View 1 (cartoon, rainbow, N blue to C red):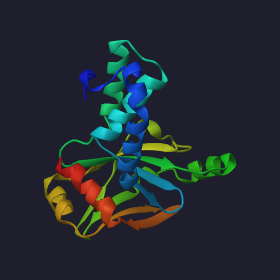
View 2 (view 1 turned 90 degrees about the horizontal axis):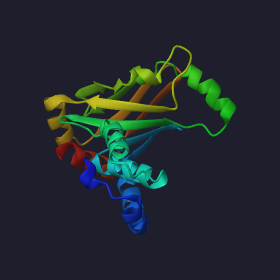
View 3 (view 1 turned 90 degrees about the vertical axis):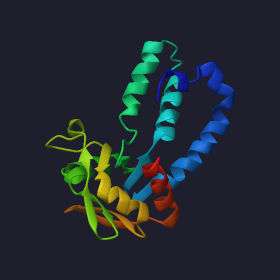
Length: 189
């Protein structure tokens, strides 16, 4: 993604409703709920382009250097070869519950795996700046470093699971066929 991909907020404004609708469709297939409060949003070029475009629009950013800063920030979440990336939202509506649970879930990011046809178990990589000894952030940026062999298996997989094995949060979700197809499309691009 570079500056040529980003429309000014004036150019984007009349296109925004249609672009947002299209992004909602793209995100719907990549949003995977694991258990009652772990919401994984698998990212790709389009989802990150949308994030940058929305930032430019919402903050009326016009300076090329400021736009480039947004591009540089969000481009880190575009998956590279042989990997998938996700934003994990740990969602609790009640502020008091959230406060307690984010303390209980310290170490969660080290207990998330992607299991491909029960042959490969891929441990996530995470941003250490989002974790401290007392609590986790309610937003986590995760990388699933598949590598070549697991990527090839993923593209042929009949079953992929997201698994959490934290003592305070143990869940398993088998991706639905349309979710799996969307992630296969991202991995192959």
